[in-house]
Amino acid sequence: MTLALTSLRLLTPKGILSPKDYIIQDGMFVELREETPEGIETIDCSNFLGSKGWIDLRCMSGEPGEEYKESLDTLGRVLEVSGFAKAVVLPNNHPVTQTKNEVEFLKSKAKHWLTELILHASVTKDAKGEDFTDILDLHAQGVLIFGDGIKPLSNPDRLMKTLQYLQKFDGILFDHSYDPLIALFGQMHEGAISTQLGFKGLPNLAEDISIQRNLEILRYTGGRLHFQTINTAKAVELIRQAKKEGLQVTADISIYQLIFSDTDLMSFDSNFKVVPPLRGKEDREALIEGLKDGTIDALVSNHQPQDLDSKQVEFDYAHPGMIGLQTFLPALVRLSAELSWELLIEKITTGPARVLGLPDVMDTLTIFDPAETWDFNARSNESLSFNHPWWNTTLQGKVKYMLSKGVFNKI
Image (cartoon, rainbow, N blue to C red):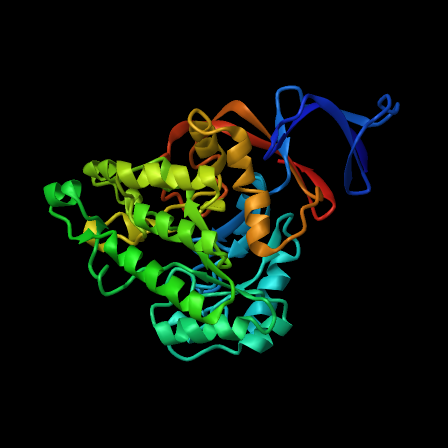
């Protein structure tokens, strides 16, 4: 298939390029330096923006085990309509992604996706933080990312040995670092709002001391450590200093941490219950500075689908998490009033590519309309779950086309 994209403005980390014409031929995307050939399909992109295909470093499927929350088929579809050309899927299924069989199952289900699946396997059996999985066997199946997903690798001996093992093949440890005992029974950010609402607070300390300890272990062992969904000011400063020292450390944050705060829980809407919790103004300001100075490498959707029974209960019993793929672009649009598009795009393209060690090439493409509005409801939702505060509202920002795996699709 050959087609022309006219007057498309490309976003890069260095700026927005002036409108140009491009051609897609045999799955390749190149600038058109002469007149558009006659007889080929032409798409007017004058109202659109384009960039390298987006990369999500953290999303979740219910399948296997909880297909009613999100099947792999629906996850593939929602990733596509949300503009993600590559995605890391968490291993916290039932069973956990921890053997050759689970890896082959994921590969077979995802081979028809337009989005490229990036494998992430559990580093301990059943993600319990105790006995190791067969790391080398999993690596032989193409796995480079290891970690226990939504569970922290809180045992320092296991974290130390993991960092040592992964150096055999330049693997990466992805860790959601917090101390589970300090965080025990925490329902939301510990502060004035939690006191006012009468909820057990989850203090910043749970994240801060865990990241500090894990960085000390990294200094001792070497290796590559990626911190997922950090959300405290102290964590940002610790990682900033570690990068200055030359440690191989990277970090990401959930995009919703920049959109919502602990004050939103005044509504008692369980869709705002997430881990790590929504925090306050000072932490958000630190996250923004971390994005700007390169301390934070990526923005992630942290897509965690939950069914109705998991959310429509008393707040204390509600499961944490919110979906975040179809709402990702609308969240970017809101943030673009405060942060530049160049910075935002860098955190979902070259930033996560750098974390994964991927080459900096233009082999994927996401095209979107930042002005188009649409209703987020049962008719437009591609996920099997709808646990998001923006449900049944009008959102701005719509993905239009994506080039991935050599295939160009209209969304």
